[in-house]
Length: 255
Ligand SMILES: [Zn+2]
Image (cartoon, rainbow, N blue to C red; front, side, top):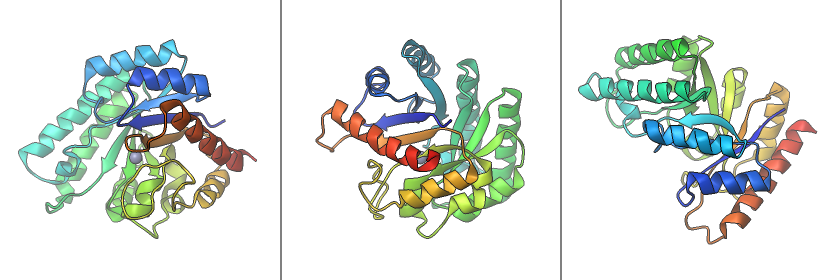
């Protein structure tokens, strides 16, 4: 059975999010990229999640620098070190999945360097019993290349519904990588930017996604990844509406 999870960035303290999410009915949470390299913060998050009996689904790795993995500069080694720290923080706190962006910036992509760093990271994660979930961002062909070349059981796919629409319109990642799916980021946008809105409020076709997940018999987490600031909605109301959207989505998968 899919666990219904949530993370909200901009506007909620982790404790506040866990307390309200539990009251509303969510099964779990995940922590965002600003926490991943902070050993004390992940430990505190774990304690808070346990206090509210919430499943700690994933840790989102630090985003800043993720495109540097495709360079042969000093920054690639630095980012590799940071990802290993993210993995350590997951392992110590029994968080099974680290989500990692496969993103390219403006620099030239050096495939050999990037793949070597990723191999090191995957090997490290395997030793620590943490899975790496590569997430779709702005470069589908690079993501496919990485997924095709790393078939280790330590590697899976994190499907992001909002990124698919605004960064790679027309792409269907679940068609191509659905059999590798281990976690999801569910949010909406109007196609013009990565807005992280509630489900069913903008242009993402969640009925299509639900029927694909049903077809795949996906049993992993269904996780909202939302932005709160600027919505003008009271926090509890915001989480309640978010939960209703996710339950509707879940009923389409389970029904
Ligand atoms: Zn995401």
